[in-house]
Length: 258
Image (cartoon, rainbow, N blue to C red):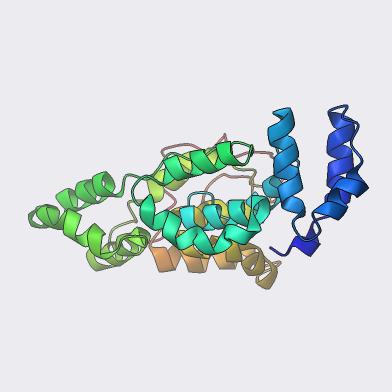
């Protein structure tokens, strides 16, 4: 995210007004030209207040999959301390397996707004149950299988679903998460869907929807067939209707593409 896309002057003036702070914004920004993000952090720390850039972060957060720690970490750094964006890789390496702790520390360091992370998907448990049903002899291979696909675990579920001709075992995860999604917003629905079945392409959700504008059902049909997964259009989600959420979804609705 380029710094020039952020109107620091407008953001800081609004922030100061909201918190009744009498600060000469123009003067302060002139001292930190091209490092305006530092002003935001310094003022937040000095007055023990939320970072003025929280609004920017919350807006951009909608365009990524918050369960993808690389994307989330990169977004946090690009907004709150862009000069450190190059440290994303080393940070994730240092906190491998403890990514939530990393996010928590970054939030504290930058006086950033809290990110509500969905409960993590227990791939080990889900894969164990799946193989126990379809091929018990392979249950002992679960740890090895997941180790080979670390960071891309969702792929193995689609592959195994196709191999054993069974619905994707991640369907239940999606059916749970979709209850809190505004299904009148197809892009939001797609982000939730990809967040479960292929998190690595969540950031392309908007372009997918634009490409299939008017043919959204075809888009989800293709994806459900690719992932051997539930098709949202086969469920009573009120997609594109006046319904504001998916809370009417019956947990027993299978909606599986054979």
